Length: 298
Image (cartoon, rainbow, N blue to C red; front, side, top):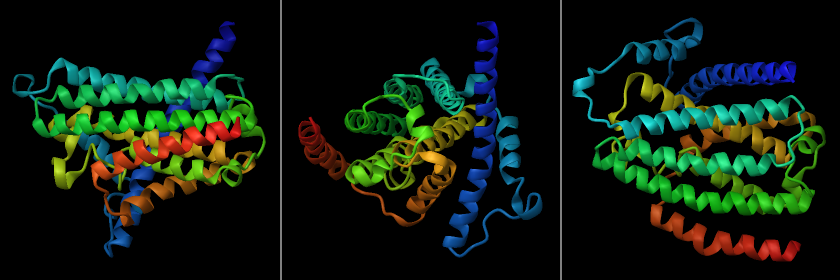
């Protein structure tokens, strides 16, 4: 039992380190690709071809600090940051357990539990900032989170009905190619992960043109680094989960990279939708579509 616990702990620690290393180079790749799409160079000064730019930015953010008496954030904002870091670690645990081949019969249900907690961290981060833009951002983020929790729940139910289990090991070992069986769920899943990860065109909690950087307006240094890094860590987890569920088999990492590139492509090309149109579409049409789909499968 002790050896098993040590093995699980080392697997989770290794998964966290590898994902954070991926995050560092993914941020660099995103900035380079966005630069070339916008006909400019992007970061190319620090290190060879700018490969050390992410580490230089990390050092700059860690060195920065605020005098405690001049901070306007409350203890609630710190609780939100700590909760988001904790949820990111939980994502890493699920990733490590699945990649190690350990059997978890209710993996997708645990995934829904962790996803549902993200909204509370966003509310705490925005509400505790004592800033009207951050408060508005947290409210929009909370409503979007509730909307996509319902959407994710319906998708997971449909996946369980099709595959017969909430376990993820069978998807990792075999290629189910559910993207060909339920393509509508895949398209709505892509829409959902964009909103859940606060990515353009559904980055309603961090829309710079409307909310002056939104949630992170009162954050700098280590708290901002935690918010920024956790967002990209969750992006990797959702990219990996999308590849496992809808494609599976031996090409999981390939499709994981393709989904990560999808985030960059969406940010570079797609315009932002109006918030009320988006929420109305999700509640009035998508949920009804899922309800009728579940009854049809049953």
